[in-house]
Image 1: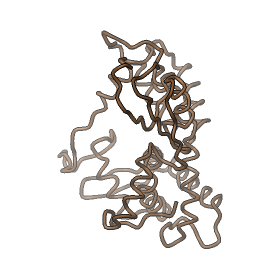
Image 2 (image 1 turned 90 degrees about the vertical axis):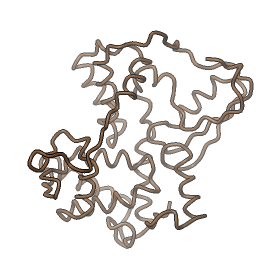
Image 3 (image 1 turned 180 degrees about the vertical axis):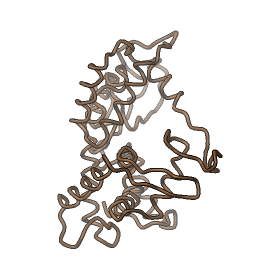
Image 4 (image 1 turned 135 degrees about the vertical axis):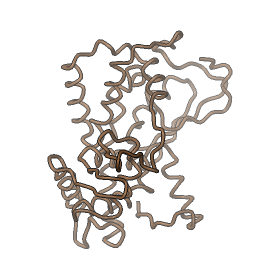
Length: 289
């Protein structure tokens, strides 16, 4: 909005203005499956000791087939959970959300996801109970004990995110059910891992009727006082490399630094570097990327 006032700036995890203007559109997930594929590769490289989903003679494709089989097993048969917080279930959607969240920070999350998936395959385990307990405040089908709230319950709301995104985007309130079905199918085709989850953003915007008093136009870009440095990863699940290239072209003199790694923004690699410099930062052994 004020390019002449821009000082030295780094923009990391770059969102395309075209996607943002359409409630995060359909371009955000372009590299999502690259990030998911890294799970299978990292599992093989780390070996059975750190990734229980592989064996010494498995291939990345073997791990992928095993993972997808575990996920699919919950589609019609959620895993029943009995804990001190009350009865619950682990559903297909729960696991899909966990996977999609994990590819944001693969270095930290992948080891836990592997243990979770192996526990599902085995029919249960402490990690499943802990995961459900932590997620209870966000779940609509959680049953409290004797009508009381769980001690882990806390306030959770995405109203701020939705109000900003949906107010800034084009008006999406005229979307029909058929329109949304087509959009959902498109996203799932682009990213089986996160398409269904990402589509919920547009569903929320379809019912968000409040609009901002002032809205920035569709055009972003301009001559800044100092060149901007954009950062993008090659396997970023929601801010793909293409978005970095697209936005860099809109700001004359800017540069794009490409990091060959998986995860959202450069922090994904920074966490790995910090762990190796200060191993005691993480109590868990990390996989080998």
